Length: 81
Length: 81
Length: 81
Length: 81
Image (cartoon, rainbow over all chains, first blue to last red; front, side, top):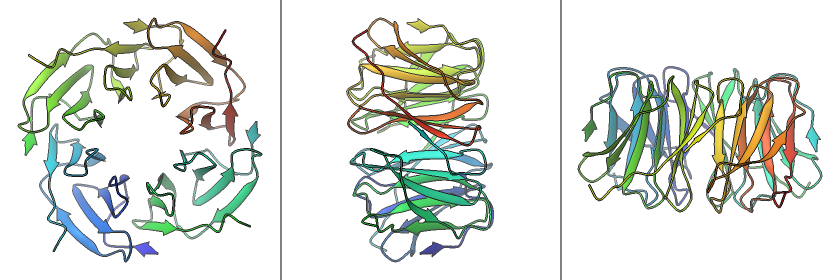
């Protein structure tokens, strides 16, 4: 299964704890994908510069992202969409 | 134990959750190895550019790879081979 | 939630095992944040050069950091502050 | 606690699963340290070029290392030393 949708190099990827979702960062954009069919479930914009690391919290509630814009963001994604 | 087989720098490595297999990426190529004897069990080709991150899903079913070719791929490897 | 406070690129991030805290490194400085409100709970200074990796121990007691200053440091942060 | 002993930048660090040991790589050299006192318990030489990633197997038996020398090595360290 190939997941396309980002417009630049994939900088980092991370599964959520139950393996149902996969987060990826590419340039300033973070996306969350459903593993079983590769559908994009969230598109997280807001960072002003490249995001080099993404990590799910152990309970899967939050996705943290560290960026070259000097900030860390904590995201929640409504995955029922 | 030394595992050889890649033709370029090893960019990333990851164990599967039960520790029986190890995935590695080097340039566009991803390989999965059996830990106990270092045998190659899968050779995953398909990315058009360097793969900088590999991660197993928590249940070990999938290997995700993020690449400079702007795509993410989800792989299943028939390890019984 | 956006966490600001670092003065340079965010190099690495890591959740502690129970997901209550998030560590980040930026240049020589490591900070630990409370996830629920983004408050800084520890500011860890001491490395003489950039810190490129941070990792919590599995029991959450220690944060390890690897730096370009050729040392590794193990930190404990009094999070009750 | 500051752990010194490497002669170059620390490239990667990883705790073993029970948190008792910490592995680090710096240039071609990998070392394993006891967390409680910072003592070096293993010095793993053999790679011909920089080691950019180290990872313990989930059961803690092996340390895998991926290197610019195009090989992956699996190490066991007699920690009772």
